Length: 236
Image 1: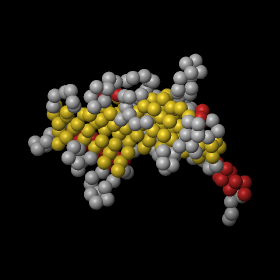
Image 2: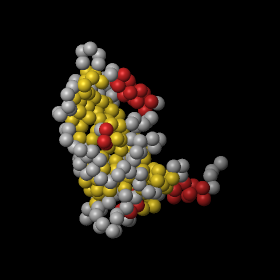
Image 3: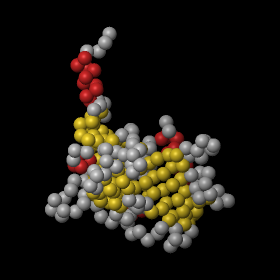
Image 4: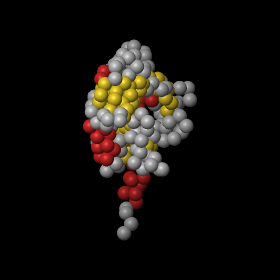
């Protein structure tokens, strides 16, 4: 039996964008992809400790603050990302990347969005098959979200946001968690003096941690299990 025409129209209209670059203010709030386990704000990154808390699943999350008319400065953004990259020739060599960055954003003349980092972002890369299997480094890349972003209503998950990277590739759709941004303080959150912290293997089965200004310290082998468990749970 065919569904009533009104029901079909409702489903179609529900997936049609409700705002296509009409106003940059549609970005304001916190958005998260997939199962929405990856979120900005507290609970993902701890910049002061240069550490991460692993979510149960991978994903991305963006937050955008509203422009402050009192200061007339550019508004702030924050990004949390937890992603995996597979290796076709070595299926056991899955690379995991945890990434956090914040800064200010502005709209270009052509409608694209320029994300300018604050300078205290960082990321952790883990590859069990690489010579250096686990390291933390600064991440402060300026990013471009090209013109074409829009919001729409998903019939199940509600208000959604579609963004596009610098080359026009779509990011995973994100769903609004909050209409107000959940972000860490919009200020310098760590003293950026150490370029890279490295955690790598040793022949005795332990792990080593090194930075350009700190002495070598041993990291328990159990630390690697965190990555293995995180991969397993995220792929379920």
